[in-house]
Length: 241
Image (cartoon, rainbow, N blue to C red):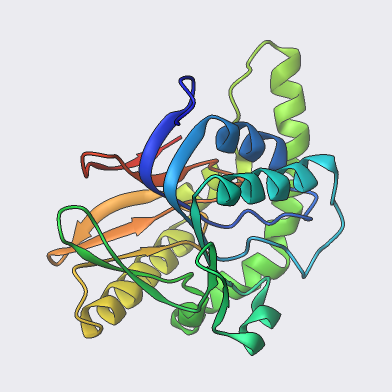
């Protein structure tokens, strides 16, 4: 029986949790997961950060336990590895009963009949060297700065989270060009797969839009944007913050 205080969704997509990375927000993610119920949960890449496992804490453990509890109560979990947990790809596909499936790509059909390709998106890094270079060097520093910027804002009574790295990404022409190139490449790939749209992650930029008649959705992340893509029980699609 659904919990009265939890919002129920048909499907929830989350990406780039980066559990174990010191810049991740497992406490916020745990709070979100405790507030929802869903039939299917997609983790669209980089669930674990095997590149920088320097910040694992009790909240990270709590996220894993919460997902296991959701599985116990009937939620199907579909996990897609990303570049930060790419070593998992050596063992794909994996299935643990009907509760957990681990694959590189997945075609999801919405209640309205749309076929959406679900993929992390790191295979398109070739479209821009910027994506990989910033991710490896400058990005980690900006995430470190985010922590102290947020602490300073809290001292002045501003409780909403604001991301310095996300702000600079929106304002930098080179970053915006890289994002557009990424979106174009992902959409073209989904079109070749005969899908009506794509759901991805990787670039930590949450959005839902149409490009050349194709639905493009990026789930965002749980380092900067703290967002999820959801399908409501009536089929409505939405990015939630």
